[in-house]
Amino acid sequence: MDTVTDVLTASEYAPNRMSQILDTVEHVLAEQGVHGLTRPNREWRPLPGVTTRTEPIMVHVCPTGRCTRSEPTPARCSLTNQPLESVPLSP
Ligand SMILES: [Zn+2]
Image (tube, rainbow, N blue to C red):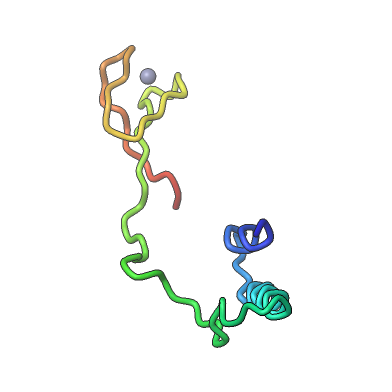
């Protein structure tokens, strides 16, 4: 399972490697008499109800640049009372 998690969370997703892992899992289970745990077509699609994020995740940071404060929601700098600056967490 750790290998599956590693492949799913790697920065470069490797569908061929995931297919190899699923083939191995299916083979090992078949030897134990368990069949059909995975689908043979190895088609990748989002789970029902899961959509691709279109809005960036934002973080609110101190506008003075003199402290490392960051918040998930809007707030104000405790020193200057300025609103924290909203910046994207990832590009
Ligand atoms: Zn501050």
